[in-house]
Amino acid sequence: MTDTRFGELEGSSDLAATQQQHPHALPERAWPGRAAPFAVAALCLLVTAWSVREPGLTTDEPRYIENTERLHSWFGQLVDQGPSVAFQHQQLADGWYYARPDSKNLPLVSLVGSLGRLTVGRFDSEPASYRWGNLLILAVTCGVVFAWIREEISPPAAVVAVAALVGMPRVFTHAQLMSIDPLVASFQVLSCWALWKSRDHRGWTWPVLFGVLAGIGAMSKPTFWLIVPGWIIWAAFTGPRRLWRAGVCLVIVAPLSALFLMPPWWTNPLAGFLDYLDLLLNDPAGWKIDVYYLGHIFQTELTPGVAPIPVPWHSVPLLTAITTPPWILVLLVVEVIGWILALLLAVLTARADRATDHPVPDPSEDTASENRAIALQGLWLMAAAILPLIVMLPGTPAHDGTRLYRPAHYFVALLVAAGFERIRQRWLSDRRHWLTATSAASLAVLATWTTLAAQPAGLSYYNSFVGGFAGASRTVPLGPSLPEPRRPLHEISYWWELLNRRALDDMQQHLPQGARVTFFPEHYGGDLLQKWGHLRKDLQIVSTTEAEYMLMYGRMGRVVDPRAHPSGTRFLHGAPDWELRVDGVRVAVLVRVNRPQ
Image (cartoon, rainbow, N blue to C red):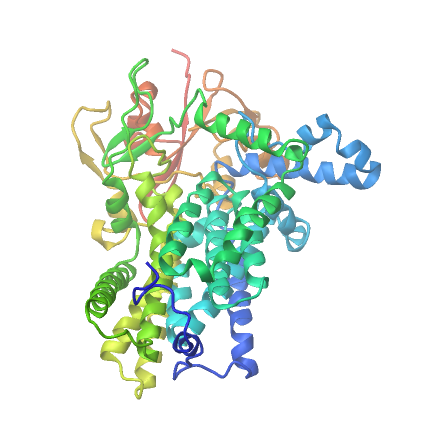
């Protein structure tokens, strides 16, 4: 493997390639060049600090917040009563409420949430105060992405990479919540960055950092683990001798870093990990979480005793095509095609060289640079492809249709930057710096406008291929396969995020004192909303059978479920006491239920 042109390059020409300076680049020793990544991170943090209060409390956040408060209590106990009390079995079990049937999560989301909550978040209101940890991680990620792309490609491409990350509304909005998948994405990117640096440096600093970041990421979610085989395969093809230190740290430092974040496993790490795997693989409830796709419900047991229908494999490419801004798709296709052609050319050239009787000379500086680019972009492409390909397998969960493979879009941003650079090298001369700068700036403006225009429904962004959010949510006749024949082709909104503080205040004007209210689909944060003063304390949150009013949200996989009929008709076509519309789309309603006959 390592004798091919795109494989291991140990010669001086490769070292020269790593030191090439792009004509647009600022000298590394100039303070503007050193400060630019920090400025990008600060700008990202400033923007998200302004927008983080817009989304309402989402479906999963109440559990994460509850676990974070448990963690705070445990650390308080550790300080007040000492390790002898805090590290008792029951105290650990109560404080570190993870990896168990009713809380399958791992602790990173609560640790990151605590970091934000106890620092910057202490000056903010709920639920935003719990989201600040994710904002800090996102800011660091944006700064690293900018620095990485600027160093390896060019400053204009670095601008495009950050613009692509910010310009995917679903990705950027999701990253501002107290959520796990954005942490998976960030630590995958940061780990890949440290892995690549390990390839260039012969010391242990970068490999150890790679191991630490990989270990931290492993405590975010099991989907993080899926990138590890990809790293091994990539390293085998691109230079195992240059990555042996990273391999050692992946085997030793990463598990130790992960274990450090999970004290309940300290006494028996292997048993704790194996029990968690058994929990994931043998969960009696399985992954029966509704997915609404093309007007039908998948992955849930609609009829007792009948196995759920898996989400079709083509949901991944189709939903990606309609939930990603078109300009990003174009540059992604340019990069993928360009990378494949470059790889084929490198392979054919290497075979031709081996077929000659003459010794193969050391690769030139240009060839070394090309091989380096193939290796780097291959790392990004591998990381971007793993989760979507796995979600395409039958029986794998899909949740809202895109969430589980949304971390791949962070690597899409890197590939988009590489695609932009291919176009720049082909059609934009280095002598016309203004044209390159104008192109990058235009894409940054387009990305910003796309994300702003999608708000507050950033998590429900659909592109112009389906007419935007309004077009994707339009009801159409789809036949009698479900009780409500006129329904949207696509999911309206999944996570309750559009029911923010303003919407709740408006809705409560239509509720009498002491009203009995239920949420449908279920919202686990009712008690928190009352505690924070977002819901009136006189309101009684009760079950469906006891309620006078039902607050319904546009999660189509639950609303049009035949077991909940006539909820679909009531939500889509009924006359509610109150409704919330975004871009003309009905996303929430308040209706009277259980009226006396």
